Image 1: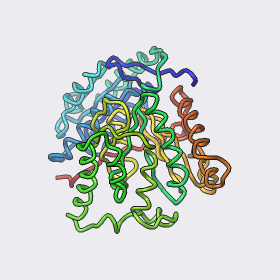
Image 2 (image 1 turned 45 degrees about the vertical axis):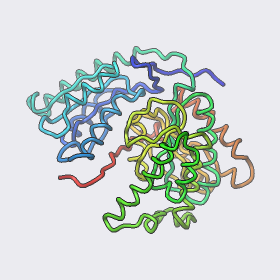
Image 3 (image 1 turned 30 degrees about the horizontal axis):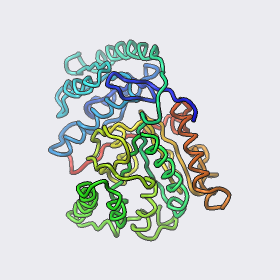
Length: 386
């Protein structure tokens, strides 16, 4: 296997990108954060639409996502921007991110005479921080330093037959080599949760897997919706999927065959090795956001119909199981796994191609989503805004 290189952070974690992240504490600071990022090479901002008028679990989730994104090893330094009267504390977010040892600064618009002055100060700070980051040197790392997130979206019949099993091959390789893999999308375990529970390392973990599926179904029923009727989505049905169980059985292939070490809450930081489950929605962007807040540094995203989704801070490798749709979405897809369905390659053959692609991406190769500046971001909401 080729040598790998990355950025070792003060807390010992390893990143494969070196972003300067501009975090708006709330939607009221998002415009200023974006303007600062636009002015400084190497800076990216997240389009946070939350951060105020949230209560209980929603407040906690938003806070956890913002801190988790700041602590993600792909981020080298952080500037947090707040309005000053939002629910999320700008200062607290900055202080918690700073526990990782990386440089963190913050600005509050109401304390800096408005948006124009705040942007000017922010650009000056961000330029200085970006210059410091540009001096950082990569060092040799190991595949065991990597945390891989696996995601699927825009599924069709080829997802469970080709793209997901090939991604599962990579998942097993990463775990075997001492790394970490995160499987998400709780709604897409429905009908297959018992198979995942059988792979749990303990009865407690098995019970957690059953619990999160039961909880998401009960949550939907509490608002008069049966997920078994609302899934698969119209796009999935057009792609040939007929039941949620069929979709779920294909979905879980992404996680390979490794034992499941634990179940994490949405955006909870993962410190262990091996395969973990994160309790996220099936909505692709919110699911990826949660896993990146948990510490994932690279994403393999499988699809059948094709999707351009990327991320502000991590490379997203697109794998499609449908050769015809690969031709239609070639500008956005990195790997065609449709050759499995066509009988030209085995799952292992394509899995090896994805694994090698991932190694190149770890070492700096841009995915198509990165090259096209796809930076989708969304925070899972548990209830309404108040």
